[in-house]
Length: 178
Image (tube, rainbow, N blue to C red; front, top):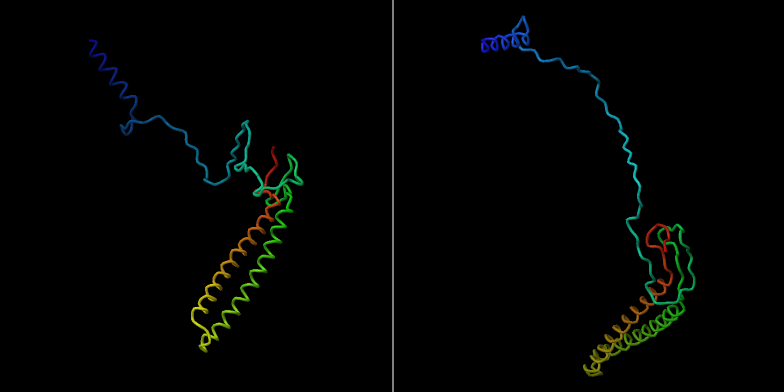
């Protein structure tokens, strides 16, 4: 009898879960709500504790050796790019610039003279009044003077660059920290 009783219970349970009209098994119902789709911003907020540090923390230093005459900023001051932070003693750089400028003028005078000399010797060479060797020596001397002029111009640019670096400027915008 226990097997027969078990078969009867299974048959009853199966009959309770079928729809009477169709004989199909019905699933338990699910509540569905329909809403129109749309787009909108969803605010995101994160609360946290900590310390904020900038992406860049440059160490500022003078690019030339000179005595600091004046600091123009204090700790905590806000700076924009290019703001003056310090002024260095530029006396040596100004004197070097003047000397290089005078040397440039001297080299230019020598170059002008050599160019005139080579032009005269070229005319004399064409007339057969001088030896080719004398003209070649003058042309070589002209090349030497041109090279000297280029070297003096480079020293002049270097002196001007160093004079410009006697002012220390802020490389980025930010706040002064010690």
